[in-house]
Length: 161
Image (cartoon, rainbow, N blue to C red; front, side, top):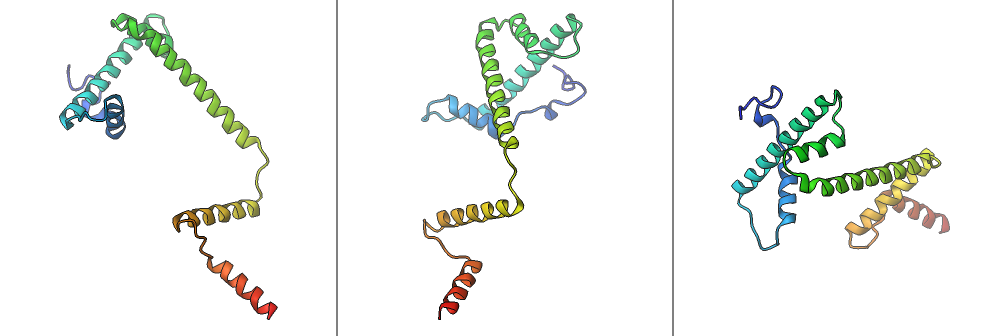
């Protein structure tokens, strides 16, 4: 393949996040198996090539149907054409799961956004409460009073005297 085969970009421009791919590779293997860096790089390159292959074939399927947008069914058809028909069911199931999770996420965000908005004072109080919890966790569960709290305590003590 020509290095400029990806719509006017060199192969170096088309890549996948190395850390994410390394994590995926490690999750798929037993804990006692190590993967050489060269092997990780090769696997990442294989993934990039596979994506390019599927994308290109999906585009051809899409063009044959006189469509301008590649749809999931074009990708599934491309898998079949390229000889990956045995994966179509699993890929479709993953796609359906993704749609479901995306729908759940959007419903959750709508619920969160449609609720009553906090006033600025409520938001500031909530922020201070969260800071206090974080400080307590950092200090091993011991709550360390902040300067404002110390002043309030001192004022209360001096008023009582």
